[in-house]
Image (cartoon, rainbow, N blue to C red; front, side, top):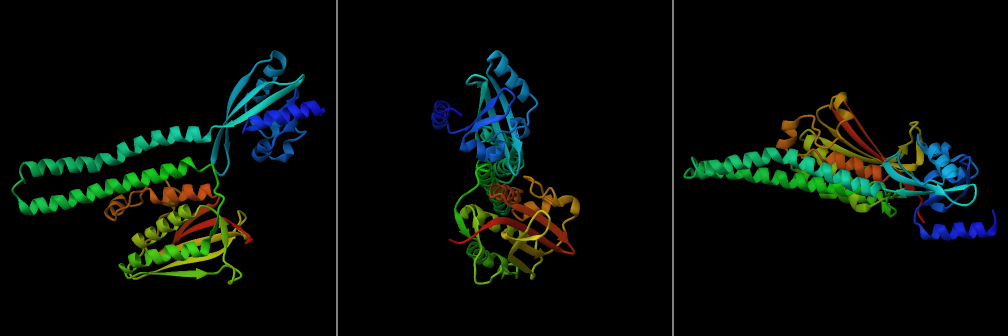
Amino acid sequence: MKVDQKDRFDSLSELFDEAIIIVDEAGVVTRSNAKAFDLLGTQITYNPLDNFLRHPDFLTALDAASSMGKKTDLNYTRMGHVRRDFKIRIAPYEVDEIILIIFDTTLENSVERIQSEFVANVSHELRSPLTALAGFIETLQTSAKDDTEARTRFLEIMQNEADRMQRLIDGLLSLSRVEAEEHRPPRNQVDLMQLVETVVAAQQHRAGANNMEIVVRNEWPPQDELPLVRGAEDELSEVFHNLLENAIKYGRDGSQIDVRVTTGRGINQQFRPDLVRVQVINIGETIPEEHLARLTERFYRVDKGRARSMGGSGLGLAIVKHIVNRHRGRLRITSSAGETCFSVTLQGIKKD
């Protein structure tokens, strides 16, 4: 590469905060900036770019830039741990060279999708409590306006419905916030054992009301070293609050909830010292296998009547799933013989 060409490319890279790639007429990568390496890997250099960037119109766009000097924009989606959306701009550059600038449009597209889903979900889920409230208000204004006993009973039900709407809106706002940031993995260090113990302490009173006890088991080797993970402390706290609240709601009165911190397993089910796993295990009704894969869908409930009577919004596990995804972790749910286990596996880091 000539010095002046390298200088021009370096100057161009400084002007954009996006991935920039130069290819020759055959589509072989000749130059790339750090953003491109982060997105596609350092192995793209001196290799055909279409081996790493799959798009049905990619080669056609390269040919249009090379033979006709035409600029083309392509929409491109990468389906990894989380979905990411991009716009690829392809245009002529130097003689016999083509430039690609890859704009990350994930946040922009996510916000539009989340706003649309938020309105649809609110409209659907608020219809029932609003209808109930309207009915009770009408009754209190007419046939029951002088009935003290009915007024007291109806006002209590109306308060419950209003509380349910508030929980629903809070849950949707929390879910929307997490989804919008899902493509950006957090960078802070979190002492996972300390966080788990803090959450458990906060939930012990709730468990005690059902004659239940939460027991924390630190099985992280070695015992004198606390596991650290890369994450957002507030979000991970929300994960374990949700899982423990779920375990208390659906666990058997008088039973024990186990929270185990152990070494995690990889995809091949082999233990890996760089993974940290937290399991929340409760004893109650077995969840049928056909429901397990859908538990993290928003508003999905195995027993709708029971979930609503216990104050469930159907959003807690959806929030857990998206937070775990943002942390590039894994959530696994199993249930058999009355024992249900929610397992969260996160990437561990070494202490400084």
